[in-house]
Length: 282
Image 1 (cartoon, rainbow, N blue to C red):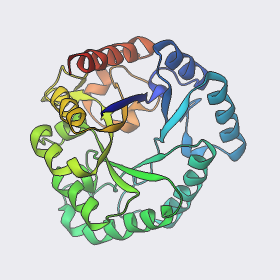
Image 2 (image 1 turned 90 degrees about the vertical axis):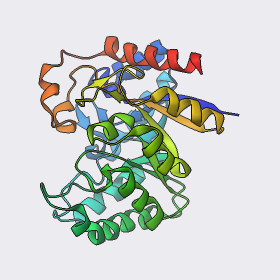
Image 3 (image 1 turned 120 degrees about the horizontal axis):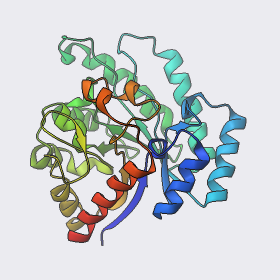
Image 4 (image 1 turned 180 degrees about the vertical axis):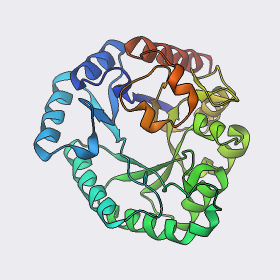
């Protein structure tokens, strides 16, 4: 039987962590994908600050679905060793916060160059990350993202099959595939279906602008209907991107970001309602 568990990037509600958690409480969402905490990325927090995050989670009765880390969001030509050290700290963070997942990426490619030229280096680096997490009890979810090696469905599949491991799976993001001019359903979905263990709920128009689930061309309803029929049991993580929030400009290097009004609980609520409408239909 299918079991969809709702989570979300609550830093889109507010930079303040307590306000994020209060917003999730108001919407009845019991999980969070932790990314921004009081204006800082989760990867930059001290051990003491992580303990405070844990206390706030417990006070609001919210659990962590995933650490929304920036691992793999550097240039493939950048020094890797400090980045691997950061990943080791994030593993500790995941353990402290009882997170079953860590979201990762597969490195930005030099602009205008063929990603295949960097495949071996990508596999070496991602392989080191996967190996470091081996035996930790934490699963790494690779997110398809613009301009990284794993931005197309084929290269995501390459990552999944080359580095195959029980703790190495796919986080499926429909909007990101649209922004890479990929067909979400059935093409990308069918290619990655055996590896999809986490889903980001984000839809987009043909020009790449993000819209609520079901209002774009990402065929989100078809994706979720098929997952439900297949007995998917896992998280659906809301990543609305419907309004501006602290850190958005660093996540989305596109012109439409500049036109967004300030986001908050009101835009998060819109994204949440759109998802619930789909779930009620399927």
